[in-house]
Length: 333
Image (tube, rainbow, N blue to C red; front, side, top):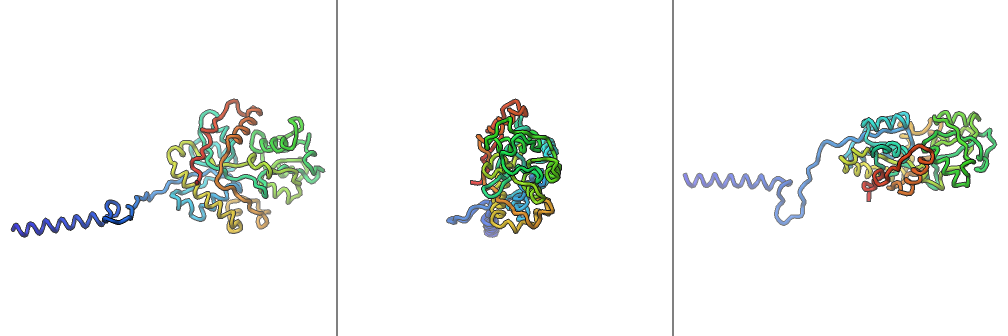
């Protein structure tokens, strides 16, 4: 009986030993360099992105199409919005986690408390492709920058459009009294008035500007020499950033890969221009996809310049902290 009991004990010991060495997450065989396997969470976090139909968002759609977000451990839900005010209302209500906007929009959202953090440039002009254009109607007779002095230029007031207009003209030597603007909030109305001659001049972003040119408008000035003025940014809610830092890091890593794909082979993604309504139908087939910026973020000088402009215009009465509103720590190294 003693011999039989001893055999049973030895057998149980062998079974327990086999169970332990067969579990790679707890124990590795002696003398090996194979690390334990990481535990992977099968539920990937969903990031809700409020998106206007802008060319600026193309890398996001490419990252989604190519599975880059999923590869970085996040899912993305695109929430279409029709206007900047609608976008900002959704963000304030906590119905979206992130968006593509401009630093002025973030300043307005952060004026009472910090709600949004800029984490990366989304899009900006380059030496070969502009982002914003000051255009003249074909009937205006305007052909050079000095012709714009004293001429009413159609803009949307208190927005990036007005900021870019002022700064581009000031860079060309215009004094405050030389710059005249008129409020035409809807970009579609601005373009219609330009092409019909109802406006002598107006400001439009790419690709609406390209459509206006196709319909006869003339480019007088663009932002190729001053890309930071009209730069768009990717912004996340402060709450999301605080609670999901790895998701933000993974999201931006996917954007970086997608940016490289678009810049190296833009024609591959031409179908997204129509599928996501990023380009007007008359331009499909002829529109040249611009280069998108690699990892970068708004500088403190850029932030302070826009803030100074907003205070001069009476749009803000308080300083908005750069360090609290711009977070470069998630950019790929």
